[in-house]
Amino acid sequence: MQPRPTALLWDVDGTLAETELDGHRLAFNRAFSEAGLPWRWDVGLYLDLLRISGGRERIAAFLEQTEGHRPSPDRLDALQAAKQRHYRDLVDQGEIGLRPGVRRLMEAAAAAGLKQGIVTTSGRSAVQSLLERQLPHHPELLSFWICGDDVGAKKPDPEAYQLALNRLDRPAAEVLAIEDSGNGLQAACGAGLAVLITRSASSLHEPLEDLARAAAVVDGLGEPDHPCGVLCGPACPEGLITLSYLQRLLSPS
Image 1 (cartoon, rainbow, N blue to C red):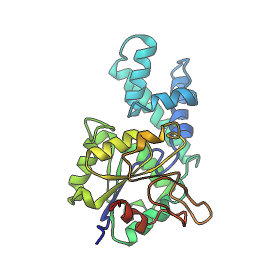
Image 2 (image 1 turned 90 degrees about the vertical axis):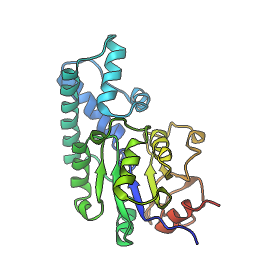
Image 3 (image 1 turned 180 degrees about the vertical axis):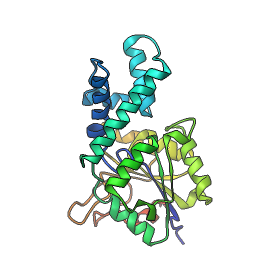
Image 4 (image 1 turned 45 degrees about the vertical axis):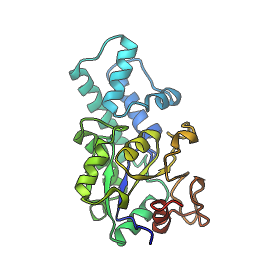
């Protein structure tokens, strides 16, 4: 008998919503402008910076490379706080919505009794802003959040997923992670999880061969009027990622 997933762990940025290019990137740029700094991160530069997990860490690495020295903690805190404020404004204005299929699959999992949690490098305030705006009934669906604030090492380190497994108190063989990027894939695999990659606008530049450890790679989760395509893994003729499809990912042939 095939094992059934008893829990799903969801990444946020790029997975639940296309937050990176038209959300976080714009918020960083507005924070720089507000601080009187001349830098504006275009899409190409931001995609390179996404190799660094965590907004504060991203700012620190960029400033150190640009200015030749490590910025002070107070300066980093101020820039990150401004960025978070601008991001919340974008979310509150409805500029960022859930990706197709996210609500459908999350609600189906909850109805089937699967436990679900968030595992992200984002800060708790950014996650809260998105969920309260786009998924107001999230307390009925999600049991816990593991955010960047909760760990000492962010993805691709597996610490966040290991913490999530401790919260779930169930074996990794029954849990599936839904991610969009190589960093997330590495983190989840490091904790012994099967992973579904749903590629996002911010991860399309990553070579498919770099995602070879994923149980499947798709271009979305799909809706009846917006079917998804499978790039690697079991076929999905109906174009919808369902619980039965996820079950197949726990038992690869």
